[in-house]
Length: 332
Image 1 (cartoon, rainbow, N blue to C red):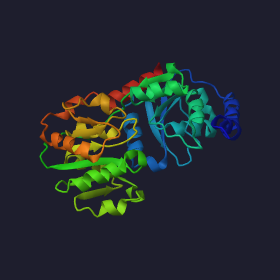
Image 2: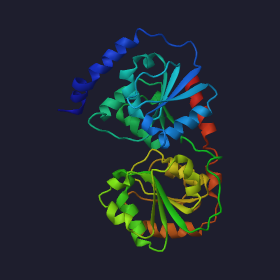
Image 3: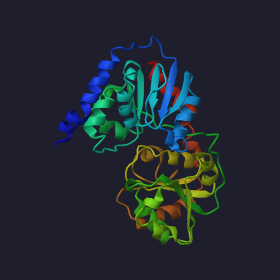
Image 4: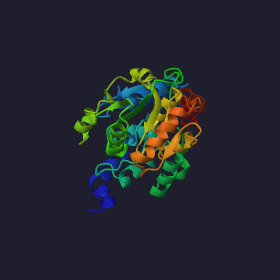
């Protein structure tokens, strides 16, 4: 069954019912109360931290809402969804949002049978603003059929107070990500295995699901910070001189911002907003998506010798600035 036919038969009728139900609700006369939406399981992870910080710095009356089933959203004039699939789910569970202002962050393409490209694009076109984390994602969504006029590029943000600058010289290297194939785990393993004299820190969770995890965990220079609270990230970044982002696909990734705010030198794959933030061989180093550990290792060595202050390059990307921009999307 084709993707479009599957969506029409299995899912679209549910949205038609939601649209009909939404007719019984009225639109707000002005935007005052905002709800930043995430799941309960996001509370102690990056998504949870994002919605807390963005709502905290909003000039409007903003609050966060966590719910496993993403049902029964509190009444508000506008809603911010930290992930595109959450918006799709909430259209069906809370049809009244279709009469409100909706801002949706599109993190990265993550199509599945349940949330296919046809499915998600159809829903995104019901939103008022879609935040793209980089210009490539905006171009991609236009090609997919999302309305150009609702797309905005925003490099999201981090905290210049939470993540503080440190003096490099410890000699350690780090990664930060949840496990997934798009995080390029084989490259992570190959780099650590082939640089035995350097200690590598991995901040994240679910790496036990990696099919070569047993090979990774026995390496004497591998330190795994498994599912640690987000509040501990600043101190962990400050153990690092060099930060590596090896992903094959990203919208951000935000850890690059966090690491640079902490004065770590980034070595990153050319995906997400890495090429927007990193000036190759000036404030960091970039490598191609098909790079091997043999390509990346010399860049790590160069990064150790780099004396530039990376923090200065990401100071515009704070939660405060980001939140003000999002307020503008609601008020515009």
